[in-house]
Image 1 (cartoon, rainbow, N blue to C red):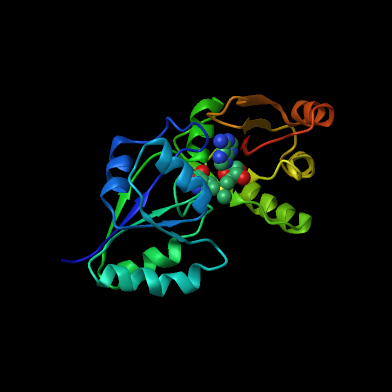
Image 2 (cartoon, rainbow, N blue to C red):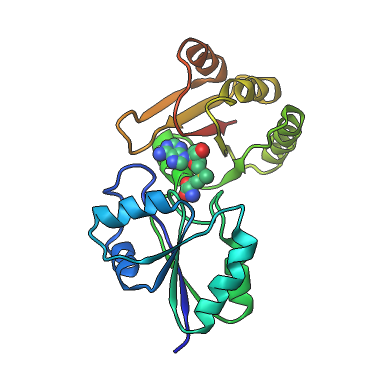
Length: 229
Ligand code: SAM
């Protein structure tokens, strides 16, 4: 029998956010490739999923583990890929594995579920029909500024594109918001923090208001930034 690779989304905080099919798939599969095995062990225990062979699969070992995963799939195994949170491949490893599997004609299926950018967008109150997702912003300020300038010009050219989404660390948020103000002016901003968790917060306002707030209250936790122009 041919093997199968399932891309399984897991919660972005609240453990209740998992689909019935994700639990079924995790129960039935032979091997789980996990970005963070500790998080996955906790998830499997929470849902009383019987012991699974867990293989660590993260950015640093992805290249090496691809061959291993392909061997398992060639042997007919059902392999699941999960990331530490949310949807694998979305600002997380897995794309190269999927590309290799697709090139070899191996079945790849999606078991969809949470992803932080979509949760943030849906509670932001910003236009949702078309949006630009920038993933994690570059580390260097000059590169972020260049990316924002290109983004601003793109948004000017494409009328239906009004919303920009990015992932950012709380430690760099203020610097990034200052660049937003420099490039986009008084744009509307949403910062969606700790979604689905106890300290969930969706803060909305003009960029200067959001900067003033986070100068007073240090940003913490995981967050998604949204810009509307
Ligand atoms: N694969 C994940 C997904 O589907 O969203 C994203 C993984 S990426 C390594 C982690 C980043 O996603 C965080 O730094 C943050 O920007 C965002 N993120 C993840 N969980 C979040 C949450 N509960 N609330 C807000 N942002 C979150």
